Image (cartoon, rainbow, N blue to C red; front, side, top):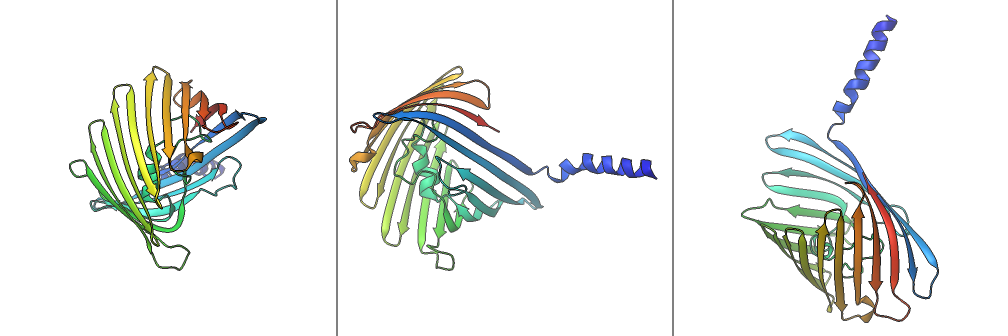
Length: 280
C-alpha cells in the first residue's frame, strides 16, 4: 500500500508541470549606478515579474492573461503593473483590464533604443504608463496592415469616454505606426517609423500631446555581442531635450552590462550611468 501511495505521489509530481504548461513566468532585473553632474553617486534598482498564460478553447479561439508586477526607480511596487485578460482568434485580439493604451504601447515606445531602464529618451513623460478600466482590440495582420481600437474609463464605473485608434503597416524591415487619442477633449497624436537592415536599426517618432510637440530620432548598430545606440529628443518644453549614447555588451542571451551617457542640455543635468540587466 505504501509503495502504491509513493508511486502515485511521484506520478502526480511528474504530471503536474503538464497542467501548467501554458503558464509562463518571465521578467527582468536592472541594477544601475549613476551620477548627475553636481550630485552624489546614486543607485536605481528596477524589477519586473510577469505571469502570463493561455488556453486553447478550440475552433481557433484561445484565452490569455497577463499579471505583471513592476517596481521602477524606487516607485511604489506595482505602480506601473498590468492585469488583463482576453480572447484571441480569427477576429483578432481583445483584452480587458489594466494595461498600456495604444498611443503609449505602440508609438511612444518606439522611441527607446538605449540600454538603460531608468534613463530613457522615450517621448513624453508617460513612459510605461498603464491605465485601469481599459478595453483594447487589435486586428490580425492583413497584407502587413493592422488596426487597433482602445477605450478606457477615467475611473471605475465611469463611461468609456477616452478613446484611441491605431494603424500599423509592416513589410520587411520597415515598421510604420500612427495613433490618436481623445481624452475628454485633450488630443494626442503620434507617428512612428523604424527600419532595420542587417545590424542597423534607425527610427523616428513624433508626438503632439495637448499641443506640445516632441520628436525623437535614433539609431543603433549591433557588433557581435555589443550594441551601440544614439538618440536625441527635441521638444517644445526645453526640459525634455536631451541626447543619449549607450553601449551594451551581452554576456549571454539573458545577461548584459552597459554604460550610458545622457546630455540633458541643462546646467548640471548630465547623467553618467553603468548597469547590469538579467532577464528570465
